[in-house]
Length: 157
Image 1 (tube, rainbow, N blue to C red):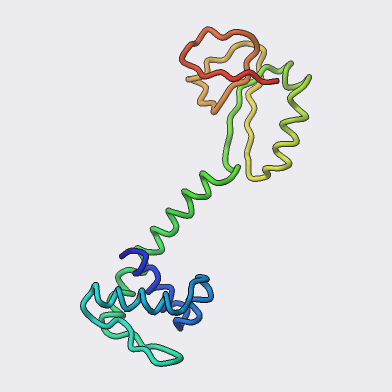
Image 2 (cartoon, rainbow, N blue to C red):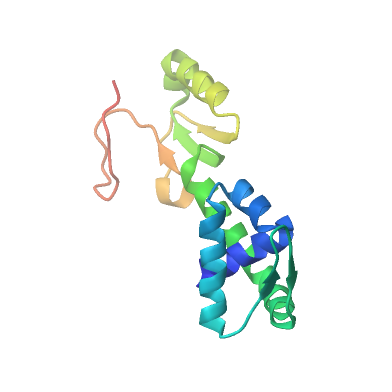
């Protein structure tokens, strides 16, 4: 039902079923069918349709006015979550030995940052072992065998 309410709002914002179908890239017949299904679900007409336009009924106005904010809020949340998981963006804190970064990792990090401009990389460089959990780092690059068995390690190179 949420998807159909969202579609109803898109139709009203687009000004016609045809415009909504074009912007949503779904057939006009599907838009019409889903609006009719929503009207059946509510038990009332939401739109008075003609061949080229429509007029919202009282119930249609009520649905639009009450649902608009909520649908857009949910859409914003969905987009935010999808952006968080779909791309390389945001803040990353990395612990790494100074010598290792200076000698061989700098080129790889520069290349990665060039390919991922949305990344804000914070490097905490030190040749002394920094406590991982208290540092609030996302990951650490270490050399040699590590004492803390709670950490997951991957061999690089």
